[in-house]
Image 1 (cartoon, helix red, strand yellow):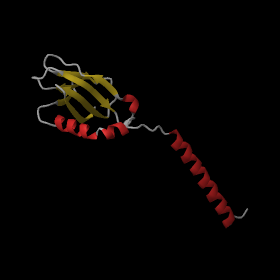
Image 2 (cartoon, rainbow, N blue to C red):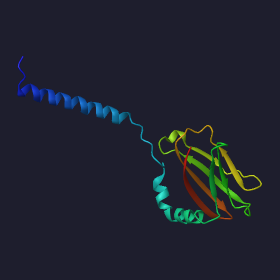
Image 3 (cartoon, rainbow, N blue to C red):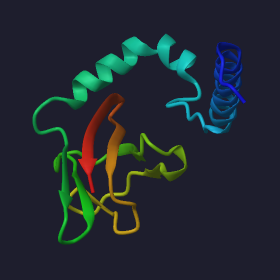
Image 4 (cartoon, rainbow, N blue to C red):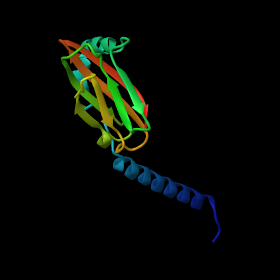
Length: 145
């Protein structure tokens, strides 16, 4: 059989269709995780979020430290404050199923320790949202375990 230009066109189009079908199947199987489910509501409250983030960036308000030898994250709140309410979220950008959220529970030194020995290694974001006497705070830090 002689290879002519008609056979070349047929092979090209067949190969193109096979590649396109493969790409459609792969794209439909990809899990799409949204960062936030209620981002419209968050957009409406952006000014309040901006103020709480600005409050959280003040020096001495919060310290987040990863202790690799103890496999824990220490979150130090101001020691002179007593009515601290809020939550801590460990956010994994690559997999929403690994996200962890917990309420703030402090010891007598206003220190919260979170054991991260069961967390998979990699990139995490630590998001702390808290209120002190009606004033809201927000702090986000990157962490590599």
